[in-house]
Length: 433
Image (cartoon, rainbow, N blue to C red; front, side, top):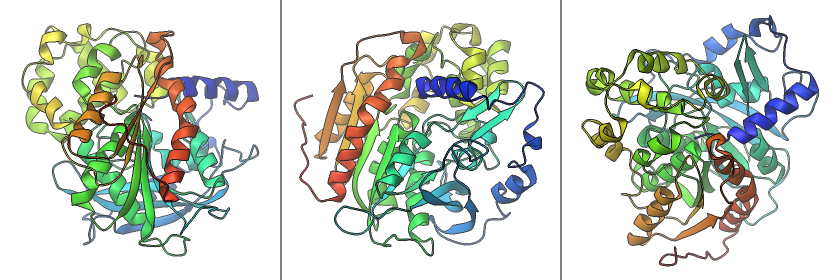
């Protein structure tokens, strides 16, 4: 679930600007890259200090650049790297990192400055892929294909210029020790919610501790935002959530398998399986028993990769050779059926309006799952506006129609969020989609 088109465009631009290091370059020779500094910040204290979800563990100023030198411009905000407490999918306390953006510009709307809690899309599973590192570095590179461009800065730059404060989580295990629990709805939802709490507790910001906030995300981030929206009423009833934007949310992971098969992003299935094994180790042996040696190799390799490398090395491959059983039957067998059901979003009730966007011809995160999420919430009386993008099929295995709607629909979604902060009426369309 990634915006591959944005990644590809970014790589082309980077190449045109001549800022990709030569093949023999080493990331540790970059004067802006200091592995010891990163290790010191991203290694949580052991044990974690006493506290509650959202409590800050440590903070650090963060440079915010578009590329490593900082010569091509910067994000119009002051950056603060944060580590904060949250709760994983098993109810255990965990440390999560992220970035808070304090805008230079005033908020032009009504009321106090609002906070957007931003769930990033697929970055990868290696620690070097963490968005908080990417905002600090601009571009990550290590030989030979370990390259990452922080495509989320496309929206972050626009949002802070318009006066929105932002906090972006890295999610569990991305940057910090352990496996990134990719598309685990509870871990991601809690990380989003507790990032909001952490931002509100930062000193010397323009935020009102009781001020309004909204959850935002697309693709993996859309699922995280949707999960946060429905978990927040119970997990953090004190937060003033005024709305949530869930773009292309992977609400039903079972539907994704046939869509990912043979696509440029088939490798994300490896991320998901690593996540399941790390979160639910009681199922590890039975899951691994279904894998062929190629399947085990996939899981081992993608565990340390960012999305560009995973796409480059595994694109267009089919899933069946990774499994020793028929994949179409396997997803309907235990423990996979139970595991898929545990990740289903839509069974809990958000207590604020939600905008869902989905392309009817999305070749990676199917429209049907996003649509069913909207229906499930409507049935519970949630204020839902569901918007369908009708971009016709185009180069489906390159997942173009998953990537482009992020950009096509993003401006309208930003306006929808601004309307929530400004107290304007919503336009729910339950029963019409």
